[in-house]
Every structure is written in C-alpha cells, then in structure tokens.
Length: 364
Image (cartoon, rainbow, N blue to C red):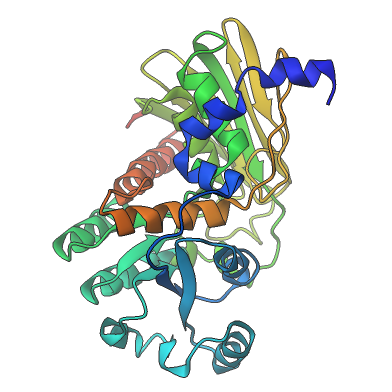
C-alpha cells in the first residue's frame, strides 16, 4: 500500500469502522460468536438473485441457513433440493405456501418475487407466524407497505427489507463521511444507477408486475444513498422522464431524472435508466468531496475522496445483511433495516412519479 493510501485510510481506521457497524464487523473480522442456533430461512422465488446471490450468501452465514424453498416450478424445486440438501417437507409452491406455518425448521421467509407480489407473500408469511425479509422495493404502493407493516406488527413478527448496502463497507463510509461532516456539510449529491434492459418479456418491463420501471428497481439505490449520506429525509422533489423507445417501454419509464431537496439545503440530482449503464455516487461538501464508482453493484466497488483513494475489503453484503437481521431476531432486538425504512422510500417514489407526471415540485 502506498503512503497516499495509508494517509487516506486514516479517514476511517479499521477500529473505527468495526465500531461503526457491528453487522459488517462480524463479516470482516470473522470472530463473531457462534449463536446457539442458526435460523432457518425459506426463499420465496428462485430467480437469479436467489440462485446467484442469496443461496451462496446463506452458505457462508453464521446466524442463518437455507432451510426451505417456495417455487412454482417443479424442475427448479428438484434442482435446489439436490444442490442444497433441502428436505422434501421444506419445499412449497405458491398454493401450499401457507402450510409453512406448521414447519418449525423455518423461522424466516425471504420474499424474492416480482414487486407486485411482495405484499401478498409478506402478509401471508406473517400470518403463518414467520419473520419476513422482503426484497426492495418493499411494495408497489404506500398503502401496501403500510398493510405489510401492520400485518407483521399484528403477528408480532419482524419485517426487514433487503437493503444490503447498509452492510457494505464503502457505502458505510459514504454514510459516515456525510453524516459526520468530515469534509463539512454536504451541499450537492450526484447519483445514478441504470443498466440496459430491452427484453420485452422481462417482468421488470411489465407494469402489473414491477409497479414501475428502473426507479422501482435500481433507482431506489440513489434514493437510499442520498438519504443515508445526509441522514435526512427529502422535503420535496421534482422529476423529468425521457422515453426514446416507447415500443419497448410501453408501461414503464425508460429513463427518469429527479431532484430531492433536503432540510439542510443539500440538493440530490439523481437518475435511473433501462437505456444505458451508469453507476456512481458523488458527494460534494464545503471542504472536499467523496465518491464511489462503481457504487451499488455486487462489487468490487471503488471509492475515493479529495484526499485520496479509499481501500476496504470486498464483502458479500448479502451474508452480512441476513446475518444482522437474524442476529437481531435471536437477540430479541429490532431489525436494522425495518419495514418503516422501506415505507419511507415508497413515499418518496410516489412523490417522484407525481412530479414527473405533473411537471411540478411535489412536497414529500
């Protein structure tokens, strides 16, 4: 490591970083105490994210394990049973899902379905007496999000949202630098996340399943980043939509830009798109700047500040995410990423869509 790297890393020493995030520390240090047992998680929906991210993450977890699956495809069920050693009694389809209430091996249900199905299966899981992790966005409307929170509260079950970057070292550093005003107050944030998507059959391009376009998919990372860098909630938004290929993006937005005003006076310029690849987070403060590029993907990520590069280890944030949620359940503590956090994002998302339709500033 160069002298410049050593100087930059003084911004956040290893001791400070471990103290700032107990959940991430467990992953980074490898010295977390082994719990009395690992909670059993059932994955609902066996698409790309479950297959390539969550299943491997669970194999490395300390506080939880893959205990069951829910799928409407028998061939997938057979493959997963063989690959992961899942008992036949822990395999469900969407019709038999409610029988999960009688299965003591499953403590937590992780909903990894198209957005429009999040509310239904979260509520059904809570009524079955299971804790819930719901992938983001937690719902397609504010009303649904409120119903999900109410159902879990009534069942005395925890509801956590799939905000994996709350456990990722580079994003944790962005949060620290911003909220502690290491370079002074943050005045301007520029953040973008998008990727090309042109498959008309993809569920993400079907409004009935997705509830919207890239804003409901990767744009939510930009909302999250601006919120955890500032530590504030936006008070108003403006937004603009651009659609160059309406024959492909018939029911959802193609590219959306929006601006969020924060109480401190910080302005966040954000954009998301299914037309092009972009991924960055740039924070401009009165005494310097800090940024990530790439910022939000599965990594490795890269960051720097006006004093030099940042250097943190690459971690599987899905493991840290699920371990932290399950550790909280085992300890009887609130989840670090509760449903209320997802509800706040849904209120902002609805405001952004209203602003894009009206062309007017919309208060949140």
